[in-house]
View 1: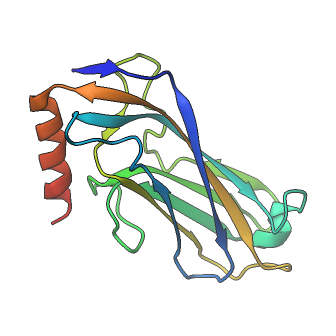
View 2 (view 1 turned 180 degrees about the vertical axis):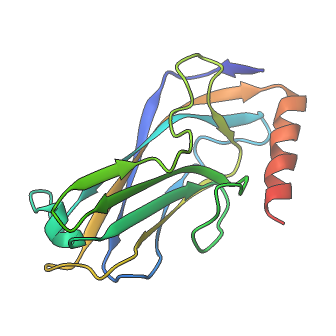
Length: 176
């Protein structure tokens, strides 16, 4: 299906949540990696989420607050809001939750953020942007911001004409 053009590399982007119950956005530009004419796509192997407080050394629980939650999603179409897990544009999602006793729990929302270790395993993206949406569902603590860094481990692949067209059609259909 795909011929690898590069080894695995990492793309990163950080989104800073400064207001509770408000979606915050960031993007990862894929224009240099995706080429329609050459049927070149980005193969996403895994997505990691790193949660930090207002600065790299601050306490995350203090920034989220006890009984708080931070959600983040990566999509290959701009939905402008959080999406349900059955949305075909969803690439990865994660949640960091704290309880009233200061415990921290990190979950992947039961979505396969790690697509496997084989060379054919992965999620193929033919759009030129990945969209990040993050949200803190409860009031932020003091100080009041949460930083979420998204690390996308990917490689560039060339697809056959049929495979590229199938992925492009699926992506277009997901836009409706």
